[in-house]
Each structure stands twice: as C-alpha cells, then as structure tokens.
Length: 205
Image (tube, rainbow, N blue to C red; front, side, top):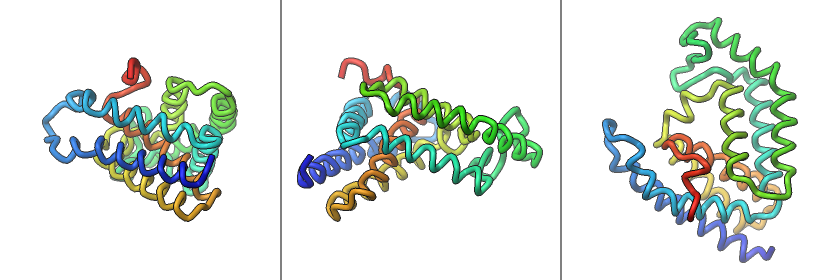
C-alpha cells in the first residue's frame, strides 16, 4: 500500500470522525443517546472499514490492547473511573473494591491475551468479535465508568487519535502508523459502545 494512499485513508477517517462528533456538541444531558445512532452509523461504519484496511490492522489492535492491559496492571490503574473509584461488585469508592479489581484483572491477563491473539490473528475481519473483545477488555480492567459512560470524552479521544494517525502517515513512520491504527480502531469500538451501538448497528451499510 502506497504512502499517499495511507495518507488519503487517514484523512478520510478524520473526516468521518469529525462528522460523527458534531451531533454530540448539541446533545443535551437529558437527551437519550439512541437518538444519535442514525446519524452515526454511516460515518463510523466508513471509518471502521477504512482503518481496518490498513496493513496488519488487527495485529495493531492486539498490540494496543495487550500493551495497555499490562500498563494498567503495572500502574494499578484498574477499577478506576473518572473520580478514581472502583465499581466492580458494587464496592464503589472503597479501597477494597480497587484491590479486588486489580486481582481480578491480573488473574485474567493470560486469558485475555490468548483471546486477543485468537481473534486478531484471524484472516477474516469480524466486527462482532472485535466488539466482544473490546467489551472483555473493559470488563476485565473494570473501566466501564470512564469509557462507556462518557461518550463526549470518547469522541474527543477518537478525534485526537485520528489526527495522530494522519500525522503519522504524513511523517511516513511505520511504527507510529501501526500504533495509531490500533488506537483508532480501539477508540472506534469504545465510542460506538458508549452511544449504544454494537456490530449489528452497522448491518446493511
């Protein structure tokens, strides 16, 4: 795949994400998120398809998930939401809840890594399996509070990662491109989940 094509793909992804982010600017706190889905399906679906067409996109996603999982364990950033509180098993705000979440994530590390390797080494692209993988990742690290419950924050993260991907393609840095492809693909999954979309939301596009 030529460098120019990769840059054009990254620019297309950025445009799609900008289009998908705009409705969130006007969304009121009391407005139901499901009202956004019709306007998000096409741009997010197009961004999914484009970033997945990058070379070794699933391997980039696997590297992103596994390195982030280890980082979270190393830094004890597990079971922590926006207010640095644990939510697993209803032990919110309790230090015991944080400790339980960390132990839970450690015990499931090898299981998650083998699960990620199986899905991301597949030759066929399955969006439903990627959604399931992202859901397992969030569950094991107990990150639901500051991912799935923060669609505006996820939109901002997704937008920033798309900009970083475009910059990496312009700098022709293969290592950075791979890292940003993994970041964009993961953030697309999490953003979609935060507004109530899943793999079936893109059927028929």
